[in-house]
Image (cartoon, rainbow over all chains, first blue to last red; front, side, top):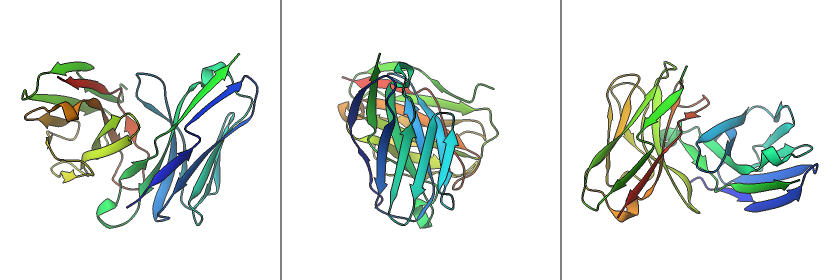
Length: 115
Length: 113
């Protein structure tokens, strides 16, 4: 069964720092990996999606990398701002058999950026 | 486009009561999903519908039923609510099962007393 782990569980940093959030998964049979943002009491907003054949994706100050063979992804946030404060979730999409199309989520990293 | 909508936003039930959570999408997606989110557990798949007319169990289906009413709508029913079903429920949709990005609704916060 696919297991997704996110480290650290929580992170508190001053504004302006560059951050790295980590995600690891146990089964490399994935279609893609998605990073989501969740604000308190809200739904999930998709930030980046990396297909299994890709190594990285970038959107603005966000850069996500994927090393499928080692089961790892990182989300890099440049020049962090207080508005980046949220929980960041990593999810992998299974690509085989009865689990095809299932998203497996990590428990998230709760990020606080203070002014 | 509203994307994925869910009703209600909040609900309080007594143990043993039943209710249906509604979900609709306007993106012409084929696949729809129901997840629950519990503190410290992450999101877990309850049921999904790969296409209109089909439904399949996910990771935690016990105590739930689903109906894919048409291509737009996918409902989740709790027949006899239990305190263990207190959670936040999210509906999602994607173009097809498999390769495509999933889009999430705002969630329904359910408390069972």
